[in-house]
Image (cartoon, rainbow, N blue to C red; front, side):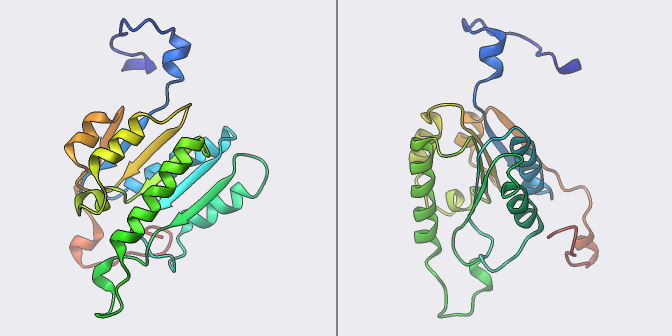
Length: 200
């Protein structure tokens, strides 16, 4: 796509403006770092356009205060761009819970997905970030056909970006834009844990 020009133009009867305004389903997947970061960068662009934004985090703990959440909440409350609503499902990675204290992550994921379906039907947001959404799909907590059906039939001009490793093939097929983040080199491979300002 040199100079922002499409390689070919489909014979679909749409004008350039109509084709440009179509809502997108976007997937950021792969083993590398940066999937969520890229999605939140897109959310910043959506905020600048004045679009209402809905963020749904499916795996990260409600107790974690991550940098992008704070930044987007401040921007969303500024009345200069779009609004930002942040939803957290569950209490974090299931394998860090003490035995006997595990919440029902599958139920939390189903509840979160039910809310997203309601918001899509009501056109609550113009831009959705479904962060780490590939995991409840991979683990079988959500019905993939139900998810694909709701995403493909969403009304209006709602853009949806989904992040997480191991995105299922049917989701990749349904998406308009897929980016796979590769892991060439990472400090964790050399024994260095995540740090403030980089991972959160």
